[in-house]
Structures are given as structure tokens and as C-alpha cells.
Length: 353
Image (cartoon, rainbow, N blue to C red):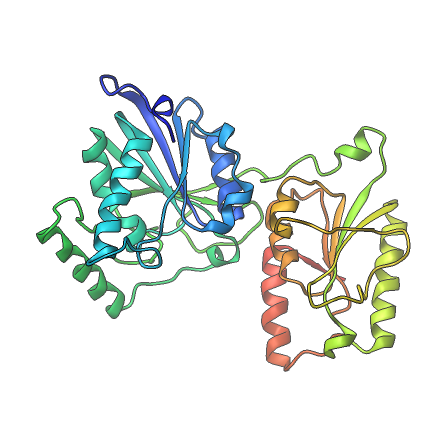
């Protein structure tokens, strides 16, 4: 970030919306919130997992920067983790600038990498008001994660840092570890169609993160599907005959729904591209599949039991079918594994064909 990105020191903007993100899904949710719920605010993005870097569009934000995770990237020398925490606060305060109202978004607040900002940033930026809001985190957001005794004790131990660095004043709280029950949290964003256990009075459902999935058809172009491959017969999940039967079921479904073109994304452990057929466009990507989906609409997404189907269902609107084929043929390790996976896929809205 250069000096031109910062608001003038002598003036304060009215409201700043700050987003801490650690995954492509969180990034897309932050972008949707910025456009639909925080319009008019200064928009500041901070990402703390390097895998998010390829999806970041700097031009979409008033300020954006990578933040080193203190535990994994401490500063060199003695007390590197502690000094990294303090440096991070200075770094983000410079991104935010002076403001009157600060809205902090994160998927979780029970972590030292994020929690210290709750008290330190308003003071550093001169904000009179601060609110915290929770970003959706995919299937992790389906259920609550109550803080146990050990986690609560750890919070108070982290608070001891203020004895040597007053700005590191950890905000202790109880209930759910993401902070949904904490007094500083006034809103929890959830994904459309995904179940959750949070108080309805606090939840706000986001619009689809990627819309216009049928744009090509509306413009008169061919309808295209994404077929997500994975090793099947090669790993014993399906017999060769069952694999071929599942491939046929997929193509029959596409034909019935008028989808004429297919992008095939194989798995690194699927060199044979077991579900591919002649005429498919084979995707050789220089970015994660999740990032590719985030900017590429499809008329449908098909697969067998790849976790990428779960991401696709959270990403695309309900006009885009996301389907898992062949589960009646798949050899699960146990009946319990089958039930658990069926429960998760169904809860996320993936259709089992």
C-alpha cells in the first residue's frame, strides 16, 4: 500500500468496513457484503492465508494487504510472535486510517490473530463506535462450536499480554467460539440455502455469491456444465463397470437438460480422467478450482463425491443445479461414513442423483 491509498491524517472518514478473510469463499462473501450492505463505507480488505492471493482484485478495494499470521510467520528474533501482533495492529491501522465508525468482519474471533483488533483498532483509528460481524465459512458455519473450559482459560492467558503491551487487550467471551454470542457481535452473515444454528435475530442471508449462471444461455450461447472428476475405479470407490454406468448417467442428465458443452476438471490423482468423454474441454488451471468457479458461471456442476461440489453449492445461485451421481454404487468405508457424507451433502443442498 502506498501513501495515496490512505485517507488524509487530518480528516476522518465516517465509516470503514474492514474484512479479515482466509479463503476464497470468505473473500467472495466479503465482496458481496461490501457491495450490498456496506455501500458508502471505505472498504478495507486484509487476507491472512496466502492461498487467497490469486482471487484478490486490488482495484475492488480502497485498501488491501496481506497480513502475516503471528504463530506461523513471527518476526525474526526474540518474542517474534508478540512483536508480529503489534506490527499487525500498526499495519491494519494504517490501512484503515482515521474513522468515526469501524465495522470489523471475520469468520471467527476466538483467535489471537484477529481478536486483539477489536479493542486496539478503534483506539488507533479514533473510532467512536465499533461493531463486529461474522463472515460465512462454508460448511463449518452449519453448526455452533461452544467454547470449552480450556479455550476460555486460554483467552484469559492471552489477555496477560496487555501487561507489557497495553494495546494487546484480548476481548474474552463465552458461548460459540466464532463470537456469535459475544456482545461485540451484532450481525452474522449466512449463505443462502445453508442451514445454521445461530440466532435468527442476528442473521442476515447473503445473495448468491456468483449469480447469472445461465448468462450464456440468455445471450443465445451454448449452455456449459462443469464436471468435477476424481479417481474412482483407480482407488476402488467404484468398479470399472459402475464407473462407466455413472458416466453414462451424467451424460444422459446433461442431454435431457439441453446442456451441450462440458468443462472437465480432473483431480491430480485422476490422470486417466475417468469421467471424461471426447469433446469435453479439459481444464488445465493455473489457479485453484475454487478460484476458477468464483469467476466462471455454469449451467450445472456435476461430480460424484468431491468436496468441490460443496463449495460449488455455496457459491452458485439456486438456478445452477449441483449434483452428486452414483452414490448407490460407491463403495464407502462404512455405512456410518455414507450416512455422514449424505447428511453433509444434503444439508448443503447438493442433490444426490
